[in-house]
Image 1 (cartoon, rainbow, N blue to C red):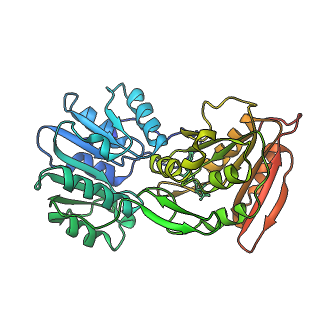
Image 2 (cartoon, protein in one colour):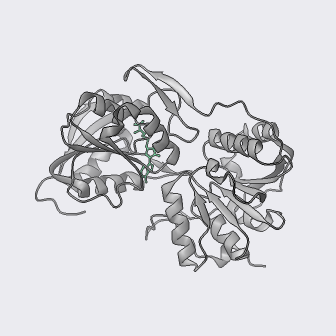
Length: 372
Ligand SMILES: C[S@@+](CC[C@H](N)C(=O)[O-])C[C@H]1O[C@@H](n2cnc3c(N)ncnc32)[C@H](O)[C@@H]1O
């Protein structure tokens, strides 16, 4: 029998002509073919590029499907892949709390997120809001399953049992237990550099301390009296520092992670009258030639894949939205050699600061630079 995945045409988002990276993996295939859930609504959590949403829609056009993902890019990927396969849209939300009050599910399908804090947070919510005994199926490639996963699933689910491994992926079947992990909703820590408490939600980037790249950038912040963007703002540490030091500065704080943006809102509340918060993929839809400065501490992975294509897209978008004379200031790991990208794109770049691991670089949008 052909699997649902084989009947679909699926692309990562944004689609890249020469990419070797697939939009689905063996765990998606296994989840679609062997979820064993009965009739009724299905809730789908953390589906990276929409393979699960598309496959379940293809399997049954009438089944109510509720799809939750923190990532703006994942929402775009799902919409793109549904359209490519001429499938009907699903009910989509950014975080699990938004499912309160919708059709109780026959079961929940969870693609294992990279961050186990998010899984714990989602299972806690499900245990608090749905009847014990509701079926849950978690899927992942074996190499993406951390050693702590069995203990976490046994703590929060009953009747857990792993499937056979197929193509190096495995499912964990279980049912909701009603138990809680004890993990706090927020991870809160004192940021001495900003003189304030910083809160992270379960899927906000970072832990209980300042990112080391962000620290070097904080020590080397530019001045800005006009319009600036904190691109990939995460919990907002750069936004807060800029708002504090530059009382006339207007800021767009943007991230593709809903939990990133929510944390940024919470942490930068004192300056919110000067901040526009945007859930977005890089700077899509931001007007060209409109800002004086872009600050960026770019990511170097997408889901499990290490890749520099997001940094590339961020730098290109930054160039587009900067006014002539405007500047992009970034921090990056030395080995990523971002100076080559910036030089190619902007025609040059300056090293502002460096330490053993990181480098802060600045590029200026000149009048005559060709588009890469
Ligand atoms: C290295 S973290 C930096 C977070 C924060 N600015 C700091 O310095 O601590 C990179 C951030 O980029 C965000 N990000 C990843 N892909 C993105 C995209 N396509 N568009 C916007 N933000 C993205 C991540 O969610 C993450 O918050």
